[in-house]
Amino acid sequence: MNGETLWLAMALVLIIEGLLPFLSPAGWRRMFAQILRFNDGQLRFFGMCSILGGAVLIWLLQ
View 1 (cartoon, rainbow, N blue to C red):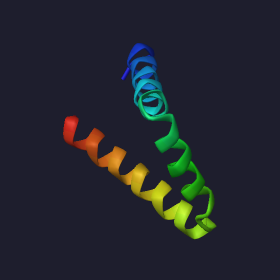
View 2 (tube, rainbow, N blue to C red; view 1 turned 90 degrees about the horizontal axis):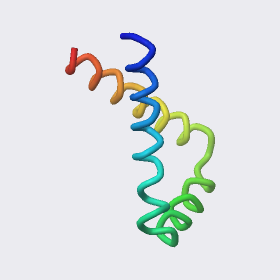
View 3 (tube, helix red, strand yellow; view 1 turned 135 degrees about the vertical axis):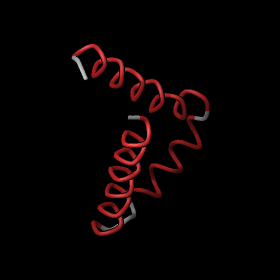
View 4 (cartoon, rainbow, N blue to C red; view 1 turned 90 degrees about the vertical axis):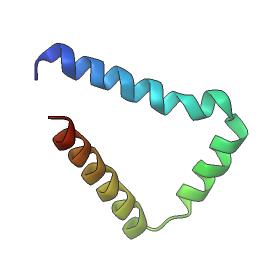
């Protein structure tokens, strides 16, 4: 993995993260308001699932 690949991956993350607020700002606000009501354990669980999902995807693509 070189520096260019890392920057391309970061750019892709920004594009994907920006899709929902661009396409449905009201839906994004509702989702964000629900996320703010999660306790720390729930947030950590979703963070861990995201990390593991990304790691598995990287592993499968290698």
